[in-house]
Image (cartoon, rainbow, N blue to C red):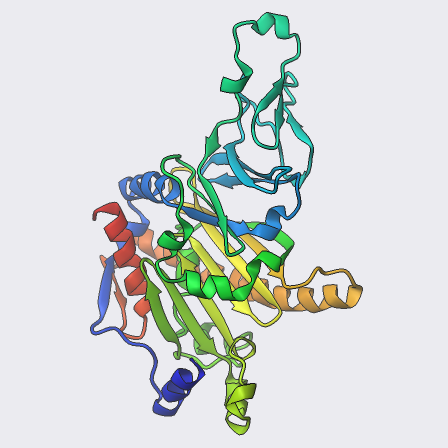
Length: 372
């Protein structure tokens, strides 16, 4: 990969498609299109929800809101990961909130109690529910799978998830990172007035780095230069830092890819994972209700070692702050303005250059999944 990047640097090139592409503006403004995306992409498609470290220990749990559905993810006493609708089988109240570690889940409404594996354990005043079979009224489980340190769920139910088949070749990268040993550092939620697709799109090309990010990360990376690869509907972009040129003075056995690049994965349809030296960022974008111009972005940061000292905390906070300031402070405000431009219908289509292959691939994959 480093040799490949050097060839691009020397030639002043990047990864190209064969021809320019186009995308209708209506894909960001059409309510019917959003409805199909929600039904097909956010219910039937396996979705990456985080690293194993999000629920690292037996009893750990986290509640995720995914396209308006509350999902409870747990790790049981035997170490297995489960995902459930966070809905009590009695009167449909949520049985958990936030994240933490628990031995069981007690519904706040009437104290019906569930195990980490979703089984209904107890019903207060059980005499009033003589005909209720506990084994048939546990939490409603949805398909989940854990492999390579990644957790996937299928919110709408259906078939079990075959992670490697879903990753379509990307599992070779995932298996090599050792993500199962990473620790969850922190997460935050960002809500923006833009279509959910604009979040992953902002990570899909390096063409804008020297313009939009000239004062932040622009000086760190080569602009308009990246190595693009696709794996089924998923993509990988490798962006070289300018200091990669220093490797030419070192023997190849001392070369290391990750410290000299940002490796950006898009896990179709909605997750961007940024692998950098020291930490990994995960940006997950979801529609917010029925509005085409609203989205919710969940940002999680994972580290190779537990952050236990003030020195380590300051190091990670500095790096994470740069990422948040760049994306939420520069990319997202412009994306909101772009969404306003879409609403104005000043143009019917968007143009993708040959130097933006990930965007072309992303929308071709979306259209394929939607039968469009």
